[in-house]
Length: 171
Length: 185
Image (cartoon, rainbow over all chains, first blue to last red):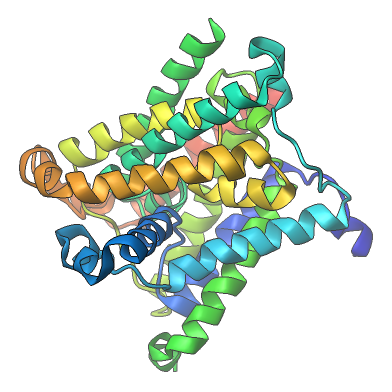
């Protein structure tokens, strides 16, 4: 059992099966579908509140997504702890500035990679909240509920993502 | 019994943490904490992301609908519209390719020591989500109502029992996995 938990990688089918079962558990135990991106919106609201005070909570968006720690925020914290545990068990905790595929195409300069990641993150955060969910909330939870929004979103995520990936890496 | 559990806030926060722990553990074991794997999927060179997502979809759609038929789960489909889901999804896609992580996998990637995820990506997502909160009055008035279809599901759209969607869809998705396994890299 321990050697299984210490493996560096599991079959994608085992991982997918596990995520499907964890999704079922979320519905039964918490009456909620798994999702991640609203936790980032709430965190952003909490940070803005530190600078601008309570008026932030009067913004229409933060009246819907109150800047507080909720179930989904704890879920994202859980992801951090779970991934850390998994990587620690398999000895995969390493600090890395530049991913190897990126370095092979664009060089190993960390500043260029960090600035690109920041810009990518801005689009990702903006788009996730615009679409009302991310690869978890729409891509897994939406599709498995047979929601039209989930299937449309996952098509748009991968269509937009593939188009830009081919532009970046020149096909 | 379940509604008592659902109403207990501290218990729910603990449940969220536990469910997230398992989810993060699985994401790391699935290797989708790697930029190379996610961008490899978008370039159709590495099919790990699709294999994981499709297996999760098939497992989850059968499991959740079975639980719902047994009265143990309720569905919560998100509302959508072309202006919301399609436009927002395409913007998300741009970020997905440029950053090379998504909101769930970035949390897992940070935990494993990916500094581009921690310092660049995480800050970007928080800025992007904050900017959206400021753009929301305009976006919600002008863009989100376009082509609205609400929290619609495919069984509702086709007016059929959910199993008449799940069974053929599961067959198609498993066939897709078989083709990927047989032909793929």
